[in-house]
Image (tube, rainbow, N blue to C red; front, side, top):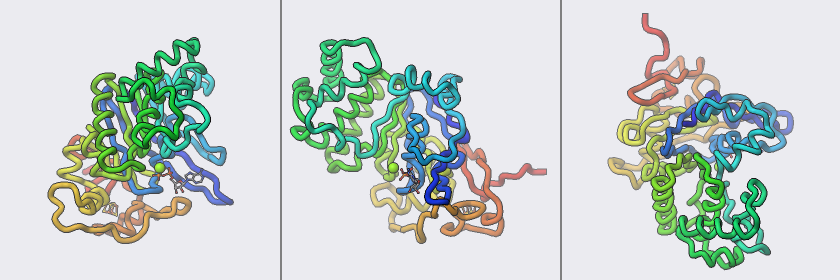
Length: 319
Ligand SMILES: Nc1ncnc2c1ncn2[C@@H]1O[C@H](COP(=O)(O)OP(=O)(O)O)[C@@H](O)[C@H]1O
Ligand code: SF4
Ligand SMILES: [Mg+2]
């Protein structure tokens, strides 16, 4: 359904260029959830914003493709994208957004806003649709009449999800939707997303720094490191048999997943994206680094049903 190719988004920062998204590629099938996983600063949020064409004003380079059924969201006229695609086909729950409700407006009015702005619905129709959507996300209808401070964190996040779904998009991007919530509430939100996925045949991009969390919901996983997707594959394969040394390290640093007896941490720091390491960006931290790694950038190499960017898997045409 969604096919992201060679996505790049660079920011200008006081004379330097931050390559936040640098050649990202992944696919999301109809009704599928993919987890976009990586450490803080790896470019996950920037990838989501790029797909929504919501670019901060210091962007100095933006390129690539994002095809939905063959239509390139990034190449089409911007006004057409805003009128016909943003929120209607692709929507996003922004990182930390549940705390950005306007405190003086009722929750229902705020959730109804996309309907009022983007459709012919009048206020009454909009409120009715909001209430219907609230039921779908497990909120009592009367929450529409409340003010944001009267809602718990979990309820606010449900309301945010309702707002992102109000125009019936086919794809929803959720940026760290559970990070600010208690663990028990996290589970409830994950269960809600699983339910919605089934009921609405939704495709989802679930962004998180938490590989253990995403293993519960994602059909496929894209692992981001320093602005690149270094491994992409079916969740079960990737979690049981990770190919990229970074994914392997990431799995060993998670206490909750099966099979990790001794906890490891990944030595070193994620790189500075205004001056990323040459060759493979993970090479300064990689336990399996060899000569070629710092000299040449590994291409995306098909391994099993997935793709990995690492020289250990070949990358040159065999003679
Ligand atoms: N508007 C911006 N201007 C400059 N640098 C930015 C901006 N937004 C994000 N960055 C930088 O881009 C990189 C990726 O950020 P981000 O996409 O937020 O990553 P993540 O969501 O994985 O934490 C980081 O180095 C971050 O500091
Ligand atoms: S290309 Fe080299 S440095 Fe990079 S992950 Fe593979 S082995 Fe490690
Ligand atoms: Mg982020």
